[in-house]
Every structure is written in C-alpha cells, then in structure tokens.
Image (cartoon, rainbow, N blue to C red; front, side, top):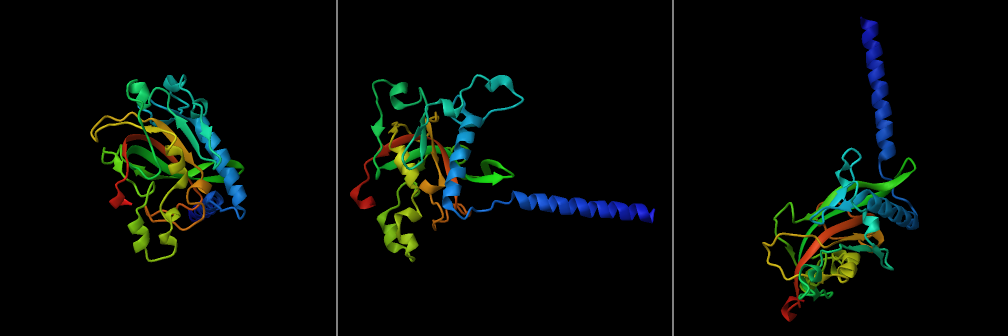
Length: 252
C-alpha cells in the first residue's frame, strides 16, 4: 500500500510539473521587435474577422462549430472591411446606417472634437504566437454600455479628452492627448454618420472598428481606464453613435 501511495504521489508531481511547464509556455512573451508585434496584430485581426459575424442587432458573434444556425451568416471579412493607412480597419454594417433606416435623414457627420453619445461593446486582445499559432488571446472588456447601463456613453475620454484635464495633469505623460485618446478609434469613427436617437432608444449597432495596438496605445504610458495594461493590445469596438453635436467652446 505504501508503494502504491508513493507511485501516485510521484505521478501527481510529474503531472503538476508538466502542467506548470505548459502554462509557462502559454504566457505571452512580448516580442523585442515591435514590427513582430505589428505582424501578430495583422494576422490575428484577419483570423478574428474570419471567425466572427454580426447578429440581427449587429453584435459580434463567434461562429459555432456545433450549431448550424449561423452557417449562412457572412464573416466580418466578407462585409467589405476597409483598412486605413494606420492599420485600423472599419466595417460599415449594411442596412444599419441612418440613411438606411430613414432615407430622409442621411445622418450627421462626426467631427474630431464633437460631443458624442455612443452605444457599444468593446474588448481588447493581445495578439500572440502560441506554439506557432498566431491569434488573439487574453480577452478583456473595455467598455460595454449594452450589458451595463443600457444607455450610451457620453463624451468618452478615450475619444476626446478636455483641455482642462491635460492642463491639470501632474506628469508630462498625462499632459499628452495620446495618454487618453485612442487615435485609431477617432480616425475610423469619422467614417460613419451619427443617428439622432434618445438615450432610451433600442440599439441596432452600425459597425465595427478594429484598432491594432500600434494605432492605440502601443507600448506607451496610458490612462488607467480599467485597471489593466493596454500595452500591445488591439481594441475591437462594436458600436452605434446615437447622437453627435458641436462641442461648446467652454467644453474644450
């Protein structure tokens, strides 16, 4: 009996050691060369767009390997994704723009300094090479108003940070717009037009914006939005702009 116990103990220790080794292999290792990270981002974004589609309300959904109900859905990669020079990709969801809902209302252009109200689900990912497989890992929620408050976010700081915040900052890094704003999100959002909806209106998400890490915070210092580091993280925004208005002079 004592020998059997010793064999079991030895086997358990071996399993634990092997498990630890495997776990350690899966820990993200930051590439020394940022160009390698950029390549990982690009590969992972393409895989993400092939693995996901938009449901009836415009939410990003992963294809199921066991449920045939999504077999006829189009991949994100089939919805005419447009890539900007920064590497940011945006997808205008067909039939879900202001002019599609009401042909007499083309929607309001979105300017860089506008006050916006935006309903969204957003996540961040790290693109990593795990045992030769390059894909997104470590999914973390960024902002989710749909499953949260149920009301659009008003004038989020990651879109536009007010001058008084920069002026009152206590460090050199925090005095820079890039410390707060996700430039790639700003850039792509201006490719859409805003609705004119009340806060309580039902959502119908109008598109997707994918911001690779190089067009987000890259490896720079940034504002602590969620308690997680956004170093090397790609952002995926799934959204609808409910309303936009010119920013009053006293709110710059």
